[in-house]
Image (cartoon, rainbow over all chains, first blue to last red):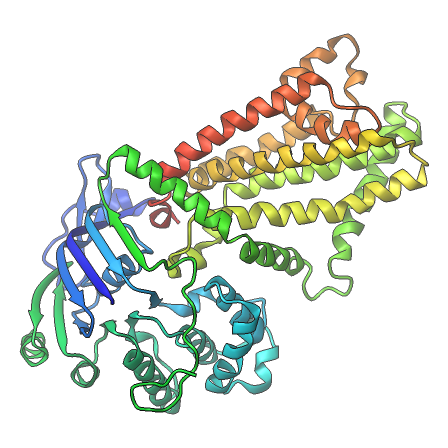
Length: 247
Length: 294
């Protein structure tokens, strides 16, 4: 039984340092990004989410569309529990895994194998479970002997392979994912899509941020359109996609 | 093996991880009491993950000397050289015999490395844990515990230098030495609260660490790390107002053969209680904002 409920969520990123003095307050009407404004305490803040309400149940496969800076990733992080909103309530039931920017969690000085182990440890897996998990990830990444070298010797694409391979090895009930991470050569992208799809098939509730209309059409049964931190459309995939395209 | 919906067998489902409990609830603008319960729960969950952060702390320790030929032996060697040089110089300057100077300075330095590591490093603990904090919904205190225990591992490894010195000068040790263990527990408890307080502070106000590092050098020279308190002569009581004096004493005095003074025990316990109260307040109020500060 998986469930997500968000009520009236708002979240602002505070901006510290030089930018906070030079940024003009309410530098409004650009199409991208959240809304920049000054709080009552004269701090600069970027509003990333505003008045978000969302209810999702078992079987919902929700695709989130929207231009850059619309708040898609922030919304995912709030659902995952990584970011705490400054307004509103969240309730989430079900084992959750978030795949947002897995390369951030890689440790440059450790080898590929050690990284796999370390990430799995952080997920609370026992040594025995890690032993089960490892061959699967190693196969997927196709990194071969590179797995014994430190990650700092990897190319950007190889890092993506490794990070993505570990992050998608779990079987959660709720999957919160940013699909825009699967970048690499054509062969890998196809493989990554397939793996992500397999993971999504097993999850009973999916929340997927993407720029790909094709992905949403094949994977999701519900779509959300975000713009400047708000949900402006929610419902049938075809209708929301049409609205997204009309811009 | 459980069967998937398509009839093919699939791998066993990975069990729930401690960071992702079945249910997650959060409400912004909560009452203070809720915030405190939440903060304490974070500390509890983090403590429950001890088997994980202990492994990671051990790896963090090994990583410092990664790609070196001697590996963690450097940690011992570096301390050994420092003790040899400072022991020689300060022993001569202060007119101490080698057999008192070396064990005194070795124990003092090993303890001081832990203290200053927790204070200086604590300020950047969350900044360096950025990768984990921005990608995973782990308890916030997890990174703090992992950090302190890395320094504890270092302390234990460096302790070999003291042990070697003690053997070399045939230091007459007695059963009092075991009192160093409760002293060490108090020291670690204090390391934890220091990191829990300084972590958010250093993440939010980046100037703090610039102020603290030079102060720590002053504290090092002004505390009886290298010199014995008795050397201050008639004004030795002034050192008693320095809390570092007592933290050094509760671990070092037993190692050198005498039980720590009642005053040291009382002061360090009081600081532990006060510090933890501060740490709990700090953690409960700041933990949800730390991710925005790093």
